[in-house]
Structure formats: C-alpha cells, structure tokens
Length: 224
Ligand code: DC
View 1 (spheres, helix red, strand yellow):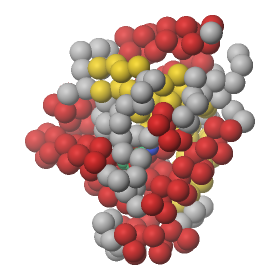
View 2 (spheres, helix red, strand yellow):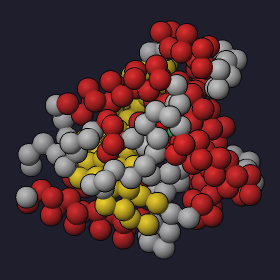
View 3 (tube, rainbow, N blue to C red):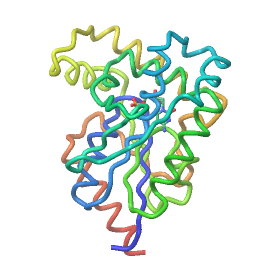
C-alpha cells in the first residue's frame, strides 16, 4: 500500500485510541497516541509541583522535558526523560493535567514537531485533538469521532475500574466535560472537526462496527 496517513480527532472517551489501535493493526500501520505525549509533560510538571495553568513555569520547564516514543512488541511506549511512563500517565488526573499543560504555546510547538517527524516517512494512524487540522493537514483520511458525554464517562469508568482504580461516574463525567471545554476553547489549535473530516458518532456503535465503517472509508480513499 502506498504511504497513507489517518488522522483521528475527537473529545476524551470517544473511542479514539481503541479504534485507532485496531485500525493500525488491521492495516499493518504504526499507531501514534499523541495524548500520551501531553500526559507525559503533565506528569513531569506534577512531579515538579508546577501548576498546569502556570504558563511561565510550564514553558520554562519545557527545555528539561524530553518526550520520546519507542515501540515494544508493536505497542507504543512513551518515555519521559528516558523513563517508561506508560502506566503512570493513565489516570483521570493525568488526563486533566495533560489538558491543562497542552494549552501552552511552547508545549504544543514541541509536540507537534515530534508528531510531524513520526509521520514523515511512515504510514501512521495518529489520534489526538489537532491531528487533522494542524499536525497532519494533508492526511489522506480524517475522522472526527464523537459520543455523548454520558457514554464517554461510562467508558472511562469501565476502563479505570477494570484496572482496579477507584472512581466515581458523576465525577468522571464532570472532569470529561471540563476537559472538553478547555480543549475546544483554547487559543492555540483547539479541538475541532477539520473541514474535510468525516464525523462518526460512536454512542450507539460497537468497536467492531466503528472499525468496519472506518475500514470502508480507508478503502475508498486508498482507491482514489
Ligand atoms: O487523548 P488523551 O485523553 O490522552 O489526551 C489528554 C489531553 O492532552 C487532552 O485533554 C488534550 C491534550 N491533547 C492535545 O491537546 N492535543 C492532542 N493532539 C492530544 C491531546
């Protein structure tokens, strides 16, 4: 297959990572989870006791943060200054911290550069908030995944409780809505559907149904 980039954007819990991973596996492509990179920056700032909304402090710390991506057994591993932080970044708190630090200009510039590099020579399925609009504006396939906030909160709840993490459904729904608001209303690269993206509401669909629909979209685009 010729080089093909697939950009998947949407709010938290719309199913982006599950779908993107499945799609990448089926198409034998690399999956790049960009949210994990912002989560790593958020984790670093939390450890340094820097408030996520302190633009000056976060930007000053940027030069001390090295985020890199390696692949182990086909799985993305995010390294923060050489340390594998895949587990530590998977909490609701890390998600909110990622959303807070990701509004800052220097953080975005650094991550977008890394993401563009990752997709330069390889076919990737990349998910995030600004992939179709900013990171890969020329991606052959652009999908905007959505679902109601109630469905998205329930998915996060099931995911976190399955991992043994203590959480409350109503609190998760509130966190998700706050995160959406910040991601959609920030000044730089806010979450929005690219004009040429196909919107897919996953509220009533199974993972298999979404993957199947997306495989059809990819096949149609690949033919052109
Ligand atoms: O996809 P996620 O939940 O892991 O993302 C965590 C946060 O990172 C999200 O709330 C906003 C930010 N983010 C971003 O600003 N741009 C991206 N491309 C991906 C994530």
